[in-house]
Image 1 (spheres, rainbow, N blue to C red):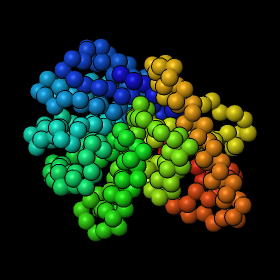
Image 2: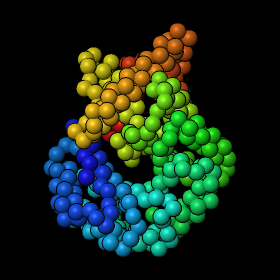
Image 3: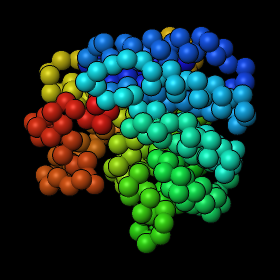
Image 4: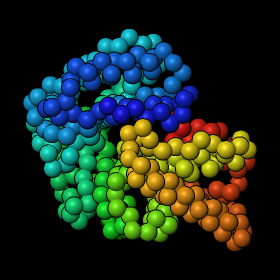
Length: 314
């Protein structure tokens, strides 16, 4: 189980990975402790992201026990933890969806996140995704779609080319993505040829699809999430006029090589954001729109708009 505290007074994210080899008892104890701690402290929200690595009766039983444990922890005057179950699209059957629909009926309902990778062209997932989403809708399941970009140098431009026509059409997926923006995830171990170019690609993606920021709580500790945390720390650093501690995903459990990579990409993100900000000032781009990052330099505006309560620090 991985704990991720983005801000001590705002929210906590707990990741669970379930396989038939998982130490179930130990995980149940940890989940219970996390939920108990949530009800006792000042955290605004608790997200529990359960990664179902294999679709088997054993894992489904473990999943049911885990959800019951979460729901049975006593707590008052607080929203129940938000539970999201991540499952591979190609391993999700109708029977699995029906089983998930019976696991929990409390509000907020658990969310099912269908995860796809860039191992094949994204358009090849369209029909199966739409079929799964329609079936989940019939079962009153709340769903999202997660695109896991293992080879981002190639697939980040591809996902833009895939999403643009969908979002400009009048299709079922367009209506679904408008309501529940897809999650874009990039693993920390992804191979990046040119860090500076990659950083600018992510900034371009954010500028094109500003809603991606809303999905940060559902992202894993990857490079897309690191970008938004870096951006937010830049904002807060200018607001409070002092240095903000930099965040390194999973610092206690990553190798030295991985930490160096995080530091390099963090530097590239900061340089890219600074360049965009400077360009905006030089070009006198002072008109704010939701789909523009031109006013990121206007810290007073950022402070008034965010009130330090961004989608990253809920």
